[in-house]
Length: 191
Image (cartoon, rainbow, N blue to C red; front, side, top):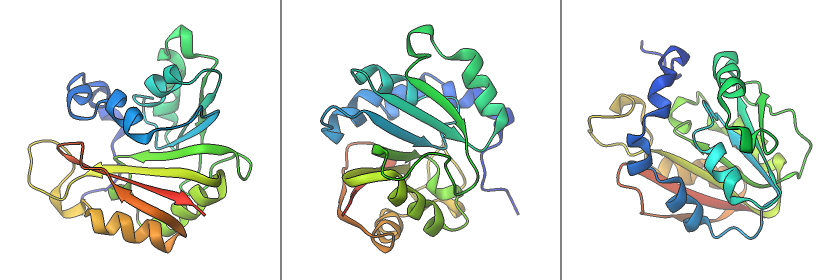
């Protein structure tokens, strides 16, 4: 059986400029309508592809760029642009545990990670723990459709799967934003 996890040896794909055209960080950020976030947690940050542009949108905040892969974290530490070295913090996490305090984050997000999860329940619970009340969990993942890019169709998830996992994890006001051509973009609020 093919592994659901992204192979860190292929990390160059994560920095492909084509990603900016199909998953614009500016479009994602603008769609979120965040009000001066101070702490953002990026779960499954990879090379920091989204951590860096999101940190540039914040006035004085921090993005904790969390990953289980030492390869990804080492790459990020060595390649972070100088102007974000203080605001993007690469952080080693376990499969379903992030070493940060409760109620710290204004936004927690996972991009192209949900399909890799063996069970979404534990990581959704961890997102719930990290978020402040009333703040946002964002999950973006490949649509379950045939297309040239992305993971095999057999391991992709539907928008309904994401919504259901968020609802089961206690999130409310779950909304899908149909603004990305190849990805589901779902947000929910910690109540």
